[in-house]
Image (tube, rainbow, N blue to C red):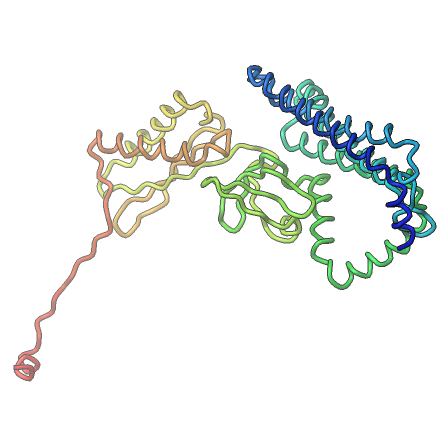
Length: 355
């Protein structure tokens, strides 16, 4: 307590008023610059990010330089082992970590996209590299900041032991999902951009975080799935190795219909759809499968291969429209289930009983 009272007595409040005035002046200048750059609509976001960057680090560096000779800046606030933590060490640690975060963003958003485009890397592989580089930069920054503060990293072994006990009792699920996330990034059974089916829900993998994977459904809803799920459960990945997908469209026609004509009409539908939508492939060729003889119809299946699984619903709908139209134009009936009802005559004695 006496240390803090002594620290307060040594504080020069004039310096604080000067610092507050400078900070307010910098923030006002930032607002003026942002207001003047609103006309640069195309580059406004990049300009705002750079201005915020200069504002934040400018204030931190100003504090370090202005109070570089102040005693309170180097007065111990608390102890961590044998190290006295001061304002100076805290500001330096914040500066290192925030600068590393900024370098990570610049690397992944500005520098790496050019490399990705040159080598035609897919979206999932780009995300994997971005995550690895980000984690690497941040781990190096944290280790550097701890070393700068003066904390002996060997002393963290005790802390690591405590964490391992905590994982053993209460953090198993979190640790499992974290490790599963790392496996997903390296092994890549799923990757960003893949279309997957989870619990009969179709969606696209949007992001793989450290604990969970975010899937965006076709209804624009987001499902947060623990990473361990993708290693422990069965997941359908329509984009895993070969993006081609077979579309199966069942059709039933009335008994007595010319089946050869039905086959020719269905193949014509596939050819017509290919002309307007290159997603529909001609190799493998479309195929008509005569399934069999149903209760009310002759059952067929039209097999069509598509190149993009994301177009599954659109192509299926378009082909169904075409099938309905071409069958109607050729007077081919699509039957509906029918049942014959036979009414037996009621015994005369039973009739008399209910009279």
